[in-house]
Image 1: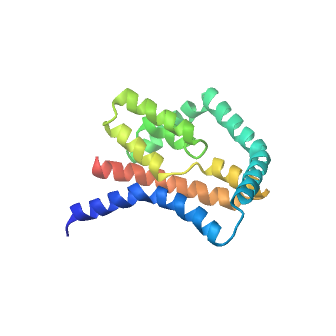
Image 2: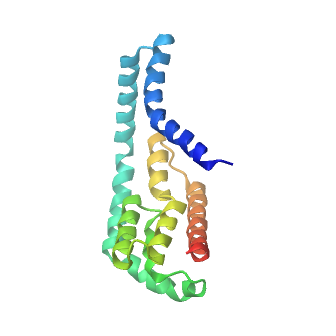
Image 3: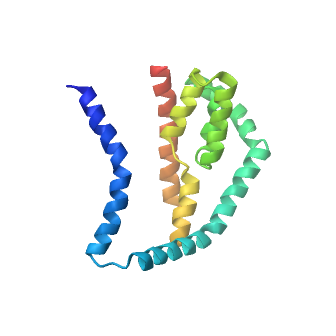
Length: 181
C-alpha cells in the first residue's frame, strides 16, 4: 500500500477541514432559514449561564489542588507508595504526575514539564510521563464541570469508574513505556 498517497490525502483533508466546516455551517443555516446571529447569541448566553453555574465547582477543585500541592501531601504520598510501586517498576519520579492527573490537566502538564526539564525531553521518564498524560483524564475536574453544569449532585459511581479508568491508563502507560522505551 502506498502510504505516501494516503499521507497526501490526509494532508489535504487536514488543510481544508476547518474552512469547509466554517463555510458549511452558515450555508446550512441560510438554507434552513435559521437566524444565524440570534442563534449564536442564544448559544453564547446559554454558555455564559453554564459558566456561572459551574464556578463554585471550579473554585472547590482549584482550592483542593492548591492545598494538595502546597501542603507537600503529593511528595509524602509518593514516598509512602514507593516500596509497593518499586515492585512493578513504577518510577517514583512519575508518582506525583499519576496523583495530580485526575485533578488537574495544567498541574499534570507542569509536572510533566518538570520531568522533561530535569531528565531531558527524550529521556525514559519524560516519554513515560507523556504517555501517562495521554492515557489518562482529569476525571475530577471533568466531573465537576460537566455534572455541575447540569446540576447533578450525586456522582459517586461516575467518580469511581473514572478513577479506575485513570488507574488503568496510568499503569498501562508504565507497561507500554517499559515495552517500547
